Image (tube, rainbow, N blue to C red):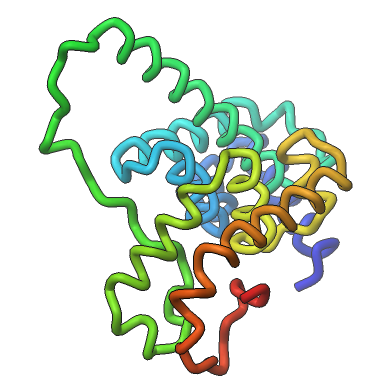
Length: 209
């Protein structure tokens, strides 16, 4: 389905929802559930917090659906809401940390972040080594925020350059520069560990290795 057709279908769904068919909202957001969650997780690196951010983002999108003007795609608009919600959560957490520096960490709340999607597309020889999987996850989550966001939107969620620029409120040249730098940073970290891995038939999101 082309982007134009997708946008037309989503526009019809939004019109139906605004007309009172609120049950259709779940159908509207279903294709974006993974994208929103992964974007939230890239900020907080904690599954529970990421779930909260994702749910709050979907609620805010629903409450503000009448304000959506289709100047961008619904997915891009939703990602923008998620980015704002994640940043707000980080600001609140920073304030709490400053107010409770002597509070011991909640060990029960420590959850290892889920692996990025499509790990099955990396050669099976690499996947058999847990340390490689963890290294890949840590390399991406360890990128500076401005590079990690662009990388996730472009190479993981496959937004185009214009959509990424709009979601992050930056210029198209900035998207290209940041993506290039993100790939170079990851390449520098990962190449020494993956140089002996035989290439598989699918490495869609690691073409730069």
